[in-house]
Image 1: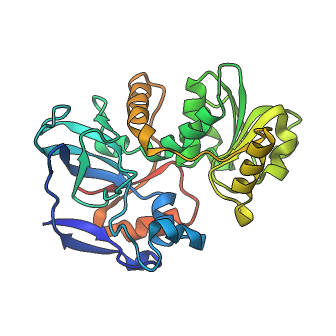
Image 2 (image 1 turned 180 degrees about the horizontal axis):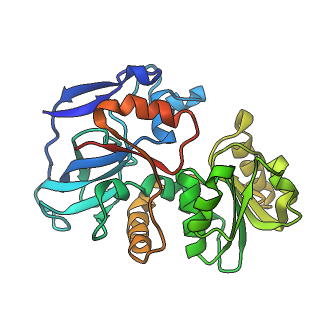
Length: 322
C-alpha cells in the first residue's frame, strides 16, 4: 500500500483525501519510481475542477477519470519490469507523466520510454520538479520559431511557465522583455531578462517598442490589447483559452488565413521525452534553474491547491512526498 492524494469527485480542494491505496507493480517495460517530490500546478487545479465545462470531455464527464493527479515527479527507481535497460534500481530520476498523471503519491509506474531522465548531479528532488511549466513554455517558443536576435515580450513572467520562458528564450539567443509586478522585477533580471517592466506602474502596451513575439504566460491579457506591440510579422500566443475561447478561435482564423498572427500551440506527449532530455542539458549547462515559491508536505496538499488558486505564486509550488 502507499499514501496518495485522491479526488474521486470534482470540487474545491476540500475534495482531496490522503488515502492508503494499492502500490503499483511494474509490468514488462515499466519502471517503478519512489516519488520524493512533485508539484501542484494550474493544470492540476483545472483537472480537479474542470473549467470550462467541455474540459470534462477529456477529464471525465461526471467524475474524474484520473483520481490521483500530479504531472511532475522526481524520485528514485525502486524496481524495474522485465526488459528494462535504460534505468536500474537506485537511479535518481525526474520527468513528466502527461498521460497518466499519478505523481501525487508515494509511488508511480511509468513506461521505460516515458518522459524521464537521470537527475542532474547535485540537484535535490524539489529542484527537479520543473518540467511541466518549462514544457508549456518551450512548446510556445518552438512554435514561435524563436531564433537569436528575435525580441520577445513575456507577460506574466513570474509564474512556472513565465520563469521558464525567460530562461529558455535567453538560451535560444532572444532579447527578453519580462512584464511582472513590482516584487518580481529583481527575480526576472536574475533569470536573464534584458528588460523588466512593472505592469503596476505603467501600461506595458505603451512601451513604444514592437516585438517579434508576445507571449502571455498567464492567460490574463488579449491579442487585441497586445497587437500594437507586434511587428508586422509578429506572433502572439497565450497559455489560456481567454474569454469565450477567443485565443483558440483566433489561432484557427490565423491558420485559415495563413497570417500566423495568433497561435495556440498545445504540448504533445510524443515530444515530452525529448523535451526532458533537452531541459536536463539546459540545467547542466547552467542555463536553467528552478524558482520555488513554497513547499508543502503531501498531507497539506489541499493547502497547496488553495495557494495556487490565488494565482499569486512565483515559479513552482513543491510537494515533498517524502
